Amino acid sequence: MSKHTLERILQSQGFGTRKFCTRLVEEGEVSINGEVLTDTRLYLETEGLTFSIYGEEWLFHEHLYIALHKPVDYECSRKPSHHPGVLSLLPEQFAARDVQPVGRLDHDTTGLLLMSDDGAFIHAQSSPKRHVPKVYVATTHEAVTPQLVAQLLKGVKLEDESVPLAAVVCRQLDAHRLEIVLEQGKYHQVKRMLVAAGNHCTALSRTQIGALTLADIGLNPGEWCYLSASQLALLAPSQTVA
Ligand code: URA
Image (cartoon, rainbow, N blue to C red; front, side, top):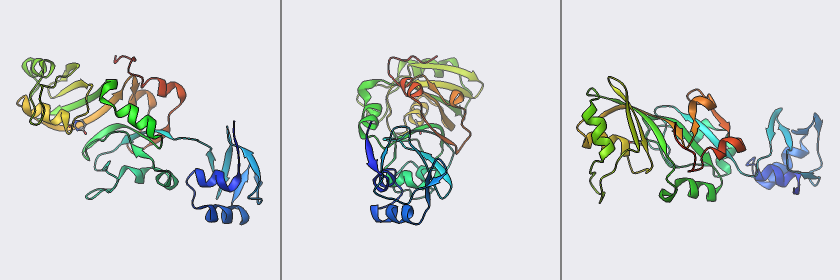
């Protein structure tokens, strides 16, 4: 439980500088439970607080934990160069809160991307020591063969890697698609593993992180949602991949 002034609350949620937030309140753009509040010095309990700005309702979040269904042709980089950045798919004030992707997907990879402004969460979630399984569906140029699956499970040697990298799970879905589960997150790992195994990837999608699946969240490409406590718990490394 903690109480803060309205101007500070708005600032903490990324709506602008303290001066700007003060102006928003004074100009009558902020309301709570349908009541316009114009006293910027009002102390409010933040837990469970919902407020409206320009008629749009927001729930106070001390930290943001977000799932995004990343569409193709968006970059995860902070300074995107060839395509729009994934942050442009989120409300503008989230960027001001320094929301960042947890790890990266290539611009042409689609699927489940976590985003947060909680540095400890980002660090823990990205740590290779945690062994959080990530499930990808790769479409391949050449047909999938039992040998390809066996090779990916046994491990393939990638340039710049001292030991061969192997899939934790790999199974054929159809003639040109396979599901591959990795516990590391090396640069272009799925694509490079497929090339090293004599095939190559023509499309790639991440469908699951830990036990959190994109299908269960039910987001269409470009859509995002806040993650609930029970969804966050599914990201724990002890959760197994189905
Ligand atoms: N592996 C890749 O090659 N690309 C991604 O975006 C994710 C995993």
